[in-house]
Length: 444
Image (cartoon, rainbow, N blue to C red; front, side, top):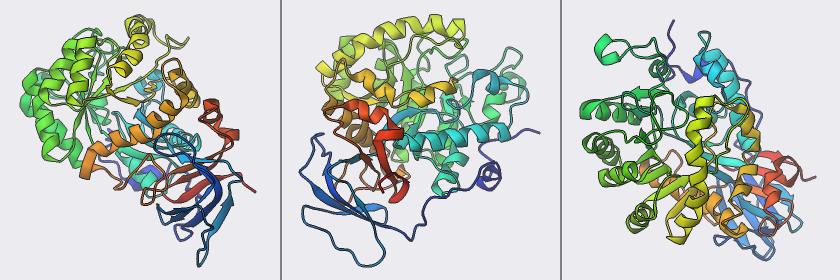
């Protein structure tokens, strides 16, 4: 029997996961006393008190805050209160499973949800209170998290990636033939991993299908990739008219298109089509980055590892120019004042997920600790809000301000001075609050 991630109900999904034991929503008053707040410029405030009511930050005051009714009081003892971490390029499903598991004939919903649910909880417990899922089967998982059936971060979902035939999202095995000519969707399409869409009409339909299921932004494959079998990294994918179709459909819904692309040619075509965010871009030149800066286009990029023992040889070879390029990309983009966002982009290597916090430290060759903290909180939060009314969580995110959503970490020490603190979430992140709910509290 074929199982579609799109049609799977959250009720079925939750049968494979244990229910969450987070505190009840009625316990929605929290006071942090004697904390130093990481402000919008990534500097620490003098000692203050912070009051959370419901899922928002109600008050920040140097004076003691008195609250009526049931309240949880946490004495911060001068420790750092900072916004929850944000990763804007995550694949919760693809990152929780190996390629062998995904391609196995025995692959099914039961197996996938077991691993993906565990991975989502671990992500939250590392201090990541928000993520943007950059493509793949996600809607049932997001719904279960939002209903508190499982623990996990806030999720801005893209839904199935949109790819041309022979594009970066064409995950067909050699024995799977074209749907257009032979009438049968590929296995990856049936699982909600991708849409293989050619021509303006199919791209429109694929975009609208994702929007129908709740996508907060659309992910289009505009160039070759390192984790796909058929497309070289240097190729440009989708015609201008095809890409414009997705942009127009997304803009009609008040949101935007993000594209997978590495090369100047692919990125310049995407910009001409009206795309608002470029994912990766490690092969970009100065002229293209300058164009992005002038037009206010976001660059959401990463620091990838050269390879791992489990990685297929074809992936290792395709990644070489990307690895070389990223060392030039970060400083050049910073110099040109490109709007920068950060993400991890772990794919098919679940063992990497535990290093998510460590990857933040890889930015230190080019940025100060304060700049990095701003990027992984406020700046990444600004990118998430580009979804406008299609954002699943309305409210300001990535900052600790009155009226902002209550996604908060209490860190043992000063991360502006010692960024490695946030790379030790088990010991150094003492309290994790998401949506006004305490998920971890080591303060006694």
